[in-house]
Amino acid sequence: MSFVSSGCLIIPPPAAKNNSMRLTLSVLLLSLSVALAGDTFVVNCAPLTIQRADPIVTPGKPSQHVHAIVGGNAFRRTMSDANSAEIATATTCDKKLDHSNYWVPHLYHKDAQGRYSLVPWTGTAIYYQNRACDYIADQKYCPRGTYAAAFPKGLRVIAGDPNKRTYNESDVRDRAVQMMCMGNGYSKEYHGFPTQICNQFIRAEVYFPSCWDGKNLDSPNHRDHMAYPSADFDGGVCPPSHPIALISIFFEFFFDTSAITDLGNFYLSNGDNTGYSFHGDFVNGWTNLTALGEAHRLCVGPDNCPINTLGAPPGQNHPGPQDLIYPAVYEEEIGLHGPVDHLPGQIINTGTTSNGPIPTTSSSLPTSTVPDVFVRNVTVATAAGQYFSSTAGDPVLRTGRKASVYEVNVKGGAATLFDVVQKKFVTAEDAGRSALRARSFRADTWETFSIVETDKDVFVLKAKVNGKAVRVHGENLIADGEEGSPLTFKWM
Image 1: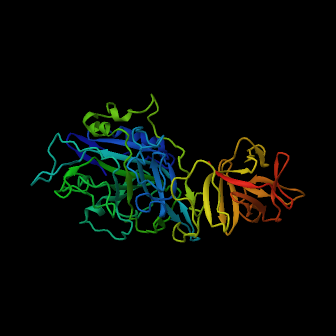
Image 2: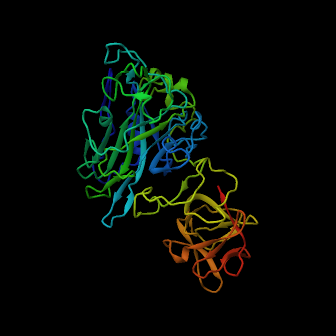
Image 3: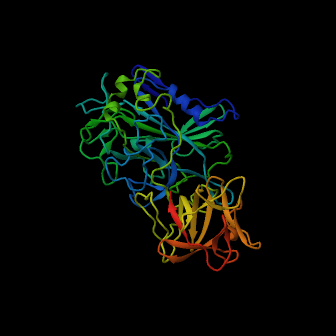
């Protein structure tokens, strides 16, 4: 999509000239930064998290499908307050005043064995455009010199429809959703998934409605408080039902399809094989709405746009990864460690997990019946406070002050521990005293432990391979003995 407005032409980043010129995130963002002009500035973002969370549609619960999320690190399943996003301490985006969150359904690819893999997601660009204007009777297009308002504090909105499976050219909401196929020396825009091989990227795009009813920060379907302008989805005078023009936002999420050589096997995480249901969610978290409201008036070119650097220490106005304040909760594997048998959310495990803000103090798995649960970013410690710890140089797990960070996957009361830094499973070796080591095996019997209740908030791990409990022997952790040292699970 090319953006044309009075006095300026915005051109999207060009496709690379050959397959060897893989567009990295930094190259994409550099291209996007050059695209700045008077009516547009770009918020460039690195990925924040991939998880089943949607605080707009399913607050406090797992979302129906997996989302790719960028923005402020206060993202979590429950964001009901007007300042829920604003309280972030950092953002993955380059505009440091912007603590907003932006998310879309992740893209999957189905292989010949019927398994689903996450298509690598490399980065995101959010265009902020001055395209709409307040309602003017009997007018369709905006006069020169008008500026749309900043978002009201706490605004949240959805664009696109996750239930769409057909395309209607006459529906402005359908026209606002597109897919750009980016290949070797070419690019072509589609509604729905491309019908040709995209040997570089699929750029999934959605344009948000820009006209506000002036009263509601949300609505029951998360759409009715907003509307598209009269001219088209990307500009014009607002209708009388929604008379207030807000800054227009347009999402571009880049998925690396360079390794995919077949057609017809892309799926959005909501189960859609057509691509028509691509959609986006937005929660406003700008910390300075006055600066946002003045941004387009003051932005006169790529080298003279104050919003680019406001709030950022010198030289630090660039996108980058950030740790979540509230760690993600995973009820099931979603593809972060390889292909999965079904799209996550289609088979939802029973059992409950923490659905609100996850505490940064200690917590534990349930003590009576252990539900199926998948949690990330946890440390494992003995009751005495000795941490599981493993190093690349010495794979033997030891107790120490420096904790390793694990993913804990519990199914049917059986747990696996996965070191997220070394990307290795904790293994019990049945050789004499059964030592625990971090090995690069896939999860199987050797990596499976039973969680045995011993007291409230305290658990014993027993190695499935020999039924022996994990205990401390000197500084080493071993699977041996009738009684193991009690272990607690602690949130990071």
